[in-house]
Amino acid sequence: MHERDRLQRLLDDPEVVLVSGYARLPDSVASHSQYERLGVVLAVHLADGRIVAADTTLLTDLAKEFFRVLVEGLSVRDDIAEIVERVQTRYAGQSGAALTTALRRCLETYHQLRESRAAAR
Image (cartoon, rainbow, N blue to C red; front, side, top):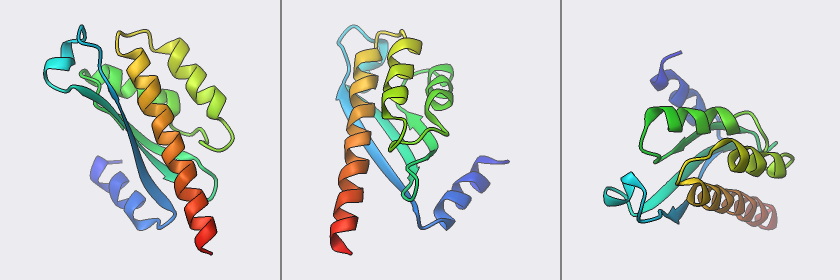
């Protein structure tokens, strides 16, 4: 499936929301001169918390794809510990701490959004 078709499918589903989180990169990381912060963006299905798409501002395509494979398909409601553990143990790059922090901020944003929507009902 082409990326544009995949994006359109996500946009067509009103239950899919985009959440993001950012963390400061260490000065020693190559991408620090380009980006001072590392970003993580997750497209999450509100009903079950499943991550349907993921992206990050990691510098290389391989690192971005590796992160994507680690988290897509898991639930930010039911699999929080597994998501964090996968990233902490499988991503051993110098940006690992920033990646974990940005990911945790995404998870917090999702839960805040869910709570605010539940309160509004």
